[in-house]
Amino acid sequence: MHRFMRVGFGFLGLLGLFAACRNNPGPSPVLPNCPSTIQIEGLAYNPSSCKISVGQSVSISASPTHPLRGLGAGNPIPTTPATTTQSYTFSTAGTYEYECTAHSAQGMKGSITVVTP
Ligand SMILES: [Cu+2]
Image 1 (cartoon, rainbow, N blue to C red):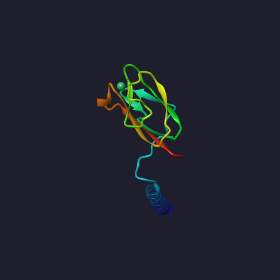
Image 2: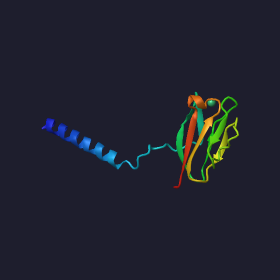
Image 3: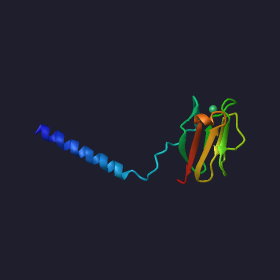
Image 4: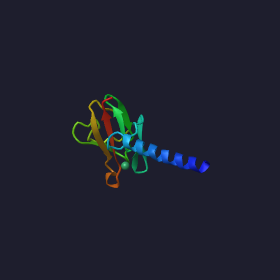
């Protein structure tokens, strides 16, 4: 009896896992919501990728040793490097990339995905 129940629940558990995977919406990874300020940890941004809604603002840490610049057209983060932490407002949906000009080659880059709620 006990042995049968263990096997039964194990099978149901596998079924549940399978269903959860199939119900996962879309092929893209789930992005965390951006915090109020994206921090610098070592030679990386934390989080390096996150999402916000159209019209929201997010601050990105920057300093003289970690100058920040935006990449790509229409990016609210200026291409002229910022050396202080500043807030940026994203009014158009899309994905906006940025980098630390001093450590981009070491992978110090990030992106903000702006979504329509
Ligand atoms: Cu840096």
